[in-house]
Length: 346
Image 1 (cartoon, rainbow, N blue to C red):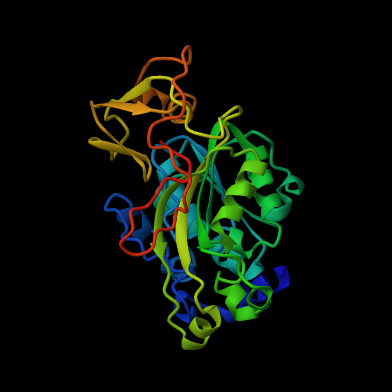
Image 2 (tube, rainbow, N blue to C red):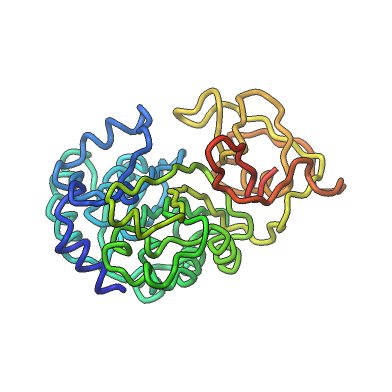
């Protein structure tokens, strides 16, 4: 499959206009704060972008960031501006043609930004341990519509977990299915290359994440994917595909359910660009100044990560009150008209 992916993204696709579905195409409305950073990126880099989401979480100033499957580098160059001169962004990809585009414009971006904080590596993200990267050295790892292209997804998530610092996060967007994709579709070159054949059944993804050490995956956003090509749509049949963004924290000892310890947080409104509300995930929109009850896992995701200075913490773990009210475990991808249920949050 790796040879298929190299050929599809190195030879077949020359720009995002060559795509036959909306899977590898970011249809999210870009937030106003990010647009100026994207517009500064060289046009050729932007044209070779095949992502399915926005992988720029808040509070990146000074962070060390790794981009898995960076392609031509659009996200790398966006993140480079967000981490600033004291941060660093490393992009990894296995397609030489894509990396040629990224590297060709490195001097352009260095002069434009006024600092040099970007590096590109050619390599297989299923074998992160072979690339000379120091374990436990990254604050944030991102990936944009690439994990679905990897046959060994367990290896990708295990590798990401090992490279993160304690309290670091894997923040990534990818394509998921509402059921397991049949083998015939998984072997189809176009279906696979368009990010559909390798899409994980969402419940299988949760299992892989937990096996890798990410005990409590949190979904940030989701959008339904349209298959514009009639032949591919017919092949898909009743399978529904969605692009979803998840954040996975490296926090040892997280519990498998949302447990209630009578805790709460109060957001200080101090994260740049998020003065009135902080969205941890799609079930935790925390208004500035308001006491917000949380489960023990959510408490730790805020207290033991880079977000700590921006919150006031109420309570502790001295008394347990059982399962947090409203905790649910239904499918994260709701059908039209349904109210989404939590994957693993309060």
